[in-house]
Image (cartoon, rainbow, N blue to C red; front, side, top):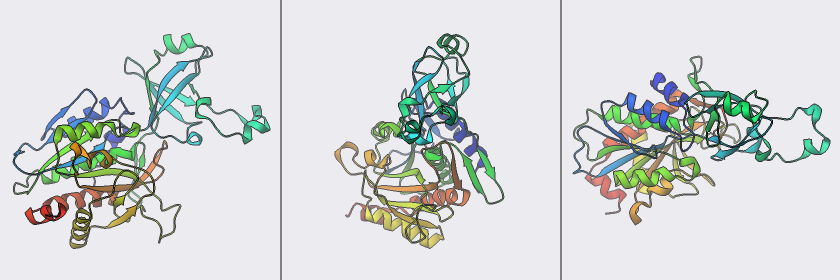
Length: 359
């Protein structure tokens, strides 16, 4: 069973790329049994208390930022121009509520603009939507009101206004930022489940990476800090079960963790994949395999760390509607992802480790 309270706190936390400080606080509050540090970029580094420094290191990775926006300028009429933080599709942006965090830390509610059909010409209706033509309205009528009454300035971050919910009728979760707060949750739960394991072949460390959505930047820092030999990368992966049939779908809700063979950023180590499948079959952990034409994860940076290859196993929780305001995922897939990571780490031995490195 997933720790639903932790999921609620970590998904509701404010944390667009570059502004992940609230997420860092949640992680530190839930992880007092570990040695936890963070840096000025908002990367978080977590180690077991019994970290030896003498074993091979396996890094558990997930990025803690979410898609958001940043205030670019404020118009004379009070509308707020913004720049995207991450890969938004323009048609998903209008007519949603958002929160702008001002410099006092206050969250100011706004609405992304959409022109009423009453005022649109036929040409405007047919035109391609340009994200630069969308603004945020906080209910003000002037630039001065936005700045003086609401305390909003250029450079203030913005996140979707969505609150987490759990549906106990079918054990599904609704909320924002499942890409990739679900991965952050998996790091925490995996390390908690392994905390009493004193005979592991590896030292297990956690690397929560900032700014993934704007170029997998944080993972470059976490890898340099934690210096891994292997990595398990957790991701809130886009579910495809609504768009593809049962023979084509590779990211279906309630079908288990997604083992990613490749995407645009990396090709997985075949022996690491084989170990995961063997572990899944042996322990009855459901999994589904994916070969992605597009997309990337922190594995793209980690597997090339320091000019040498770091074998990465990417495990995904299928999440519907990632890169929008709202997401669905299934509790059983979260549990399968954590269980897979735990059992893979427990299965690592000198023999299996050397096999991954083709020794």
